[in-house]
Image (cartoon, rainbow, N blue to C red; front, side, top):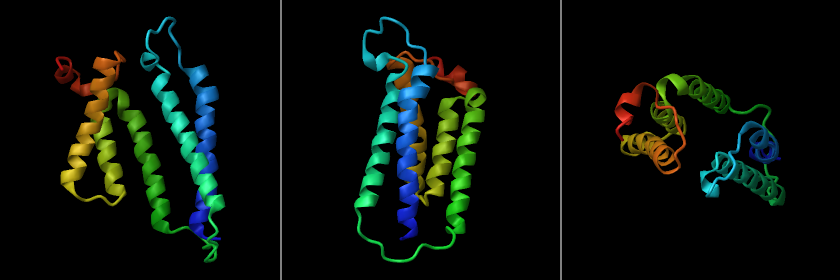
Length: 165
Protein backbone atom coordinates (compact mmCIF):
# COMPACT_ATOMS: atom_id res chain seq x y z
CA UNK A 1 0.00 0.00 0.00
CA UNK A 2 1.41 3.41 -0.93
CA UNK A 3 2.28 5.99 1.69
CA UNK A 4 -0.21 8.45 0.18
CA UNK A 5 -3.01 5.90 0.50
CA UNK A 6 -2.17 5.29 4.16
CA UNK A 7 -2.09 9.04 4.81
CA UNK A 8 -5.46 9.46 3.09
CA UNK A 9 -6.93 6.58 5.09
CA UNK A 10 -5.90 8.42 8.25
CA UNK A 11 -6.72 11.97 7.13
CA UNK A 12 -10.14 11.21 5.61
CA UNK A 13 -11.76 9.71 8.71
CA UNK A 14 -10.08 12.36 10.90
CA UNK A 15 -11.57 15.16 8.80
CA UNK A 16 -14.95 13.42 8.83
CA UNK A 17 -14.76 12.98 12.60
CA UNK A 18 -13.68 16.57 13.31
CA UNK A 19 -16.41 17.91 11.04
CA UNK A 20 -19.10 15.84 12.76
CA UNK A 21 -17.69 16.69 16.18
CA UNK A 22 -17.98 20.37 15.29
CA UNK A 23 -21.55 20.06 14.01
CA UNK A 24 -22.94 17.92 16.82
CA UNK A 25 -20.83 18.84 19.87
CA UNK A 26 -18.63 21.93 19.60
CA UNK A 27 -21.01 24.32 17.83
CA UNK A 28 -24.14 23.49 19.89
CA UNK A 29 -22.19 23.70 23.15
CA UNK A 30 -19.81 26.53 22.28
CA UNK A 31 -21.86 29.09 20.36
CA UNK A 32 -24.66 31.02 21.98
CA UNK A 33 -27.61 31.42 19.63
CA UNK A 34 -29.66 34.58 20.13
CA UNK A 35 -33.38 34.15 19.79
CA UNK A 36 -35.26 35.57 16.82
CA UNK A 37 -32.48 35.77 14.24
CA UNK A 38 -34.26 36.91 11.09
CA UNK A 39 -31.92 35.29 8.54
CA UNK A 40 -30.11 31.99 9.12
CA UNK A 41 -26.97 33.44 7.51
CA UNK A 42 -26.76 36.00 10.33
CA UNK A 43 -26.76 33.34 13.04
CA UNK A 44 -23.38 33.04 14.81
CA UNK A 45 -23.28 29.30 14.13
CA UNK A 46 -24.11 29.51 10.42
CA UNK A 47 -20.62 29.82 8.93
CA UNK A 48 -18.87 27.52 11.43
CA UNK A 49 -21.54 24.93 10.71
CA UNK A 50 -20.95 25.25 6.94
CA UNK A 51 -17.21 24.81 7.47
CA UNK A 52 -17.80 21.72 9.61
CA UNK A 53 -20.20 20.21 7.08
CA UNK A 54 -17.66 20.84 4.32
CA UNK A 55 -14.86 19.31 6.41
CA UNK A 56 -16.99 16.22 7.06
CA UNK A 57 -17.96 15.95 3.38
CA UNK A 58 -14.35 16.28 2.19
CA UNK A 59 -13.28 13.71 4.78
CA UNK A 60 -15.93 11.29 3.56
CA UNK A 61 -14.93 11.88 -0.08
CA UNK A 62 -11.23 11.32 0.65
CA UNK A 63 -12.02 8.12 2.54
CA UNK A 64 -14.39 6.72 -0.09
CA UNK A 65 -12.11 7.64 -2.97
CA UNK A 66 -9.08 6.11 -1.26
CA UNK A 67 -10.93 2.89 -0.44
CA UNK A 68 -12.32 2.71 -3.98
CA UNK A 69 -8.94 3.16 -5.66
CA UNK A 70 -7.35 -0.09 -6.70
CA UNK A 71 -3.78 1.11 -6.99
CA UNK A 72 -1.79 -0.79 -4.42
CA UNK A 73 1.42 -0.35 -6.37
CA UNK A 74 4.48 0.30 -4.30
CA UNK A 75 5.30 -0.69 -0.76
CA UNK A 76 4.70 1.53 2.22
CA UNK A 77 7.75 3.62 3.01
CA UNK A 78 9.23 3.10 6.45
CA UNK A 79 8.92 6.77 7.40
CA UNK A 80 7.38 9.85 5.85
CA UNK A 81 9.63 12.33 4.12
CA UNK A 82 11.34 14.65 6.63
CA UNK A 83 10.21 17.70 4.63
CA UNK A 84 6.56 16.63 4.98
CA UNK A 85 6.95 16.28 8.74
CA UNK A 86 8.59 19.71 9.02
CA UNK A 87 5.87 21.33 6.92
CA UNK A 88 3.16 19.75 9.05
CA UNK A 89 4.79 20.94 12.26
CA UNK A 90 5.26 24.40 10.75
CA UNK A 91 1.60 24.62 9.70
CA UNK A 92 0.50 23.79 13.24
CA UNK A 93 2.96 26.36 14.60
CA UNK A 94 1.56 29.00 12.22
CA UNK A 95 -2.01 28.17 13.27
CA UNK A 96 -1.04 28.35 16.95
CA UNK A 97 0.70 31.70 16.37
CA UNK A 98 -2.45 32.91 14.58
CA UNK A 99 -4.52 31.92 17.61
CA UNK A 100 -2.16 33.72 20.01
CA UNK A 101 -1.81 36.87 17.87
CA UNK A 102 -5.45 37.19 16.82
CA UNK A 103 -6.62 39.40 19.68
CA UNK A 104 -3.67 41.82 19.93
CA UNK A 105 -2.90 42.11 16.20
CA UNK A 106 -6.42 41.60 14.86
CA UNK A 107 -7.85 39.29 12.24
CA UNK A 108 -6.91 41.25 9.09
CA UNK A 109 -3.20 41.44 9.95
CA UNK A 110 -2.78 37.95 11.43
CA UNK A 111 -4.85 36.44 8.63
CA UNK A 112 -2.70 38.13 5.99
CA UNK A 113 0.54 37.00 7.61
CA UNK A 114 -0.72 33.44 8.12
CA UNK A 115 -1.97 33.15 4.52
CA UNK A 116 1.31 34.48 3.17
CA UNK A 117 3.33 31.98 5.24
CA UNK A 118 1.03 29.08 4.36
CA UNK A 119 1.21 29.87 0.64
CA UNK A 120 5.00 29.99 0.95
CA UNK A 121 4.95 26.58 2.65
CA UNK A 122 2.82 25.30 -0.23
CA UNK A 123 5.71 26.28 -2.55
CA UNK A 124 4.00 29.34 -4.01
CA UNK A 125 6.65 31.94 -4.81
CA UNK A 126 4.85 34.37 -7.12
CA UNK A 127 4.44 37.57 -5.14
CA UNK A 128 1.86 38.75 -7.68
CA UNK A 129 -0.34 35.91 -6.38
CA UNK A 130 0.72 35.78 -2.74
CA UNK A 131 0.32 39.45 -1.80
CA UNK A 132 -3.15 40.08 -3.26
CA UNK A 133 -4.50 36.80 -1.85
CA UNK A 134 -2.91 37.34 1.57
CA UNK A 135 -4.40 40.84 1.79
CA UNK A 136 -7.64 40.34 -0.13
CA UNK A 137 -9.09 37.29 1.61
CA UNK A 138 -8.74 38.57 5.22
CA UNK A 139 -9.89 42.04 4.15
CA UNK A 140 -12.92 40.64 2.34
CA UNK A 141 -13.85 38.39 5.24
CA UNK A 142 -13.39 41.25 7.72
CA UNK A 143 -15.60 43.56 5.67
CA UNK A 144 -18.27 40.91 5.15
CA UNK A 145 -18.54 39.94 8.80
CA UNK A 146 -18.30 43.45 10.24
CA UNK A 147 -20.44 45.28 7.68
CA UNK A 148 -22.84 42.77 6.12
CA UNK A 149 -23.32 40.26 8.93
CA UNK A 150 -22.77 42.69 11.81
CA UNK A 151 -20.45 40.24 13.56
CA UNK A 152 -17.61 41.86 15.51
CA UNK A 153 -14.17 40.71 14.39
CA UNK A 154 -11.01 41.65 16.32
CA UNK A 155 -9.21 44.39 14.40
CA UNK A 156 -6.29 44.72 16.83
CA UNK A 157 -3.66 47.33 16.09
CA UNK A 158 -5.41 48.30 12.87
CA UNK A 159 -8.60 49.32 14.71
CA UNK A 160 -8.04 53.07 14.29
CA UNK A 161 -7.62 52.60 10.54
CA UNK A 162 -10.50 50.15 10.09
CA UNK A 163 -13.03 52.04 12.22
CA UNK A 164 -14.02 54.31 9.32
CA UNK A 165 -14.20 51.55 6.73
